[in-house]
Amino acid sequence: MINLLDLDLDALSATCERLGEKRFRAVQLFRWIHQRGAAEFGQMTDLAKSLRDQLATQAVVAAPALLNEQASADGTTKWLFDVGGGNAVESVYIPEADRGTLCVSSQAGCAVGCRFCSTGHQGFSRNLGTGEILGQLWFAEHTLRRRLGLAEGERAIDNVVMMGMGEPLQNYTALVPALRTMLDDHGYGLSRRRVTVSTSGVVPMIDRLREDCPVALAVSLHAGDDALRDQLVPINRKYPIAELLDACGRYLDAAPRDFITFEYCMLDGVNDSPEQARALVRLVHSRVACKFNLIPFNPFPQSGLMRSPRERVLAFASVLQDAGLVTTIRRTRGDDIAAACGQLAGEVQDRTRAGERLSRPAIRLHPADAGVRH
Ligand code: SAH
Ligand code: SF4
Image 1 (cartoon, protein in one colour):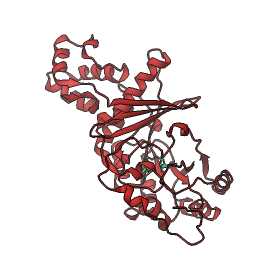
Image 2 (tube, protein in one colour; image 1 turned 30 degrees about the vertical axis):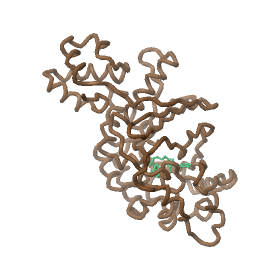
Image 3 (cartoon, protein in one colour; image 1 turned 120 degrees about the horizontal axis):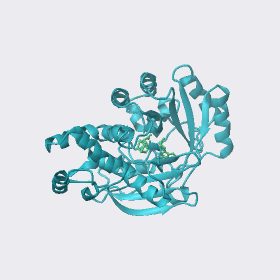
Image 4 (cartoon, helix red, strand yellow; image 1 turned 90 degrees about the vertical axis):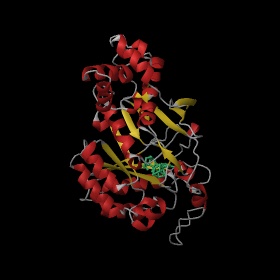
């Protein structure tokens, strides 16, 4: 059985062609699935009965099975999906006054192993398929439309961020058809500026994304020097900051936005001093057009790290702002249901023993960095 959620419009057209159908039939089918949320071929009344019958024996429209839903006091909703083999991943819907955002997962676990990230501590099990990535949006969009009683043509989600579990650029082959379907006018019709891939810095894949499917790019920087970034975001040992910033510069040529967003998780006593803010300014100024998004660290058991106090975050932001860098501080949403950035943990059958590795103290800086507690 083919899962039609695995196919972007080109792949669906090829499948329809094999069944002897023209491309416009694939467009109709695609619209039924993604725009109307149909999963039963019997519903698709404008398709020929013979095609519907053929599809019924060869294809399904199947999102990952829902295991659990949790609602936060602030309106944030978190869904847990079963992706088989004892693995489960999470998606988070964040309603705001002017938009609805869905935070989507790309992997069961993550192999990058950032110290401050709950997914990183779980280790890695496997990549999600296109249908498992897209199925999160398909499910969320159509569930919310029904729930919110939206009229035909109105949508619940107009902003997608690949900021759930996993490193999207380490699952590139499955990611790109999912992104294309999000952007497709016959699919979700989202603006390129409103689909964001967030990466820890997989440099060669940043270059490929620029060629294949440029969408908004967020880069998780978290440190302004290699010694510290090596500790916090281990992929930095492979692709150090200078290479990462060069890739960001190249990406801007094709990017739908004229800046890269740098995410910076504020860790008490680790990366939050005014000197570190000044070093950051020196690093990026006149090199990459960027905005900073400071994320107050969301604690979870085993991290051994603490959130920077509010005053320190504000002082850090001021240094960046005074140097002319647009800087925002991310509002924490859904932390009462562990749905905030970095708290998504789902269920991962770790094949990498990451938990074990990360439970060892690894941040060894200068003695002055007494704020780090293991
Ligand atoms: N793997 C990708 C996307 C998923 S993480 C990446 O790393 O960019 C999404 C964002 O949440 C990243 O910026 C990540 O650094 C941040 N994050 C991870 N753990 C966090 C935590 N405990 N508190 C706050 N932000 C966190
Ligand atoms: Fe993976 Fe991103 Fe978490 Fe790092 S922050 S471990 S790259 S999900």
